[in-house]
Image 1 (tube, rainbow, N blue to C red):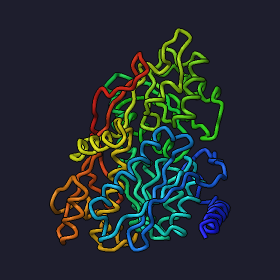
Image 2: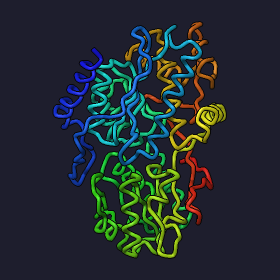
Image 3: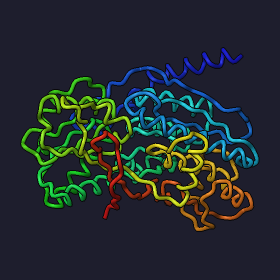
Image 4: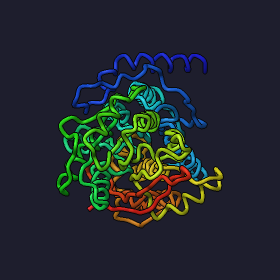
Length: 440
């Protein structure tokens, strides 16, 4: 019977791709370039011990593809939270079941994975995705299926705009702030450092184009000039060579280049810029999409043995929540290392799903959607410990969850406001946080 079920799952997920292509591409690509992703089905699916009566949730995160270096860290937070919850009695008196899907950093694979989670696994909520383009595809499937989708890392402003129009019907939230805030923080940082003329290069998807738009608006308001505003450089997410884009992005003698990239393709772009010699003397400004310990090594070293990225600066959503210390300790105890980027946001996204289900006293997407803002924002007893929160909710009390990433106060559009870490690459190729900035 298990073999038949597995085959059926594979067949339906494969068929779903064909029906969902129209919903899977990046809708915000003003120059008309589509995201021509592969048609591979999601891989690396794994399920904890199933319990038909209990809460079932899924994760849709990239453990392969362009964002794998960050996604692998994120995906570790979900089972860690589920194990913690199950160890203290589960949700609504039953253990929580988790189904994990690798979205491959690809909207088509993500859409197929979301279809599987919603229609075959029948989950009530999903943690995901990281790439905004994948979340765009997934939420269009989650909403009609009444599955609550909570992203720990999709930061495109597009989601705010769609939520304001009522497109998601309450089945969308995120624990990472939208890029309108990060773009504001980075523009203010660039202005503070005295950069007057900046060029932009971005990955051509919801994340890249949305960030570019917000940054340009803010930087110009601060008196800066966008050198290539009339000819923005937006690269195809599936591209493998970047000589033309590199030459265009660094043309016009900018003081700095804002590069909104993903790690795999971004490393190729920056390497091409170095090899052409166009990046010499130009400050590189980076964002959260590439902040991983391995990225400087991916970009490589110059002919004299120095890291090409030495001196680059960037921003990333930081974590300053009341539960952060306990989360870091738990991660180190279980995994022997420090958690990576967006791991706290992923923990909080999973926590909100479980707490909202307990508050609703039902294991459904509708129930979670109806209570997620209530447990995130209060009013109620402030709790940093998920098990304490579940106990209070079980006793009919109200709570205000204070997360590891921040206070996770979710607004009517599903957004949170956060603090940002400013990071740089040292001579040794190590990334270090040098400051914090709060957008004003």
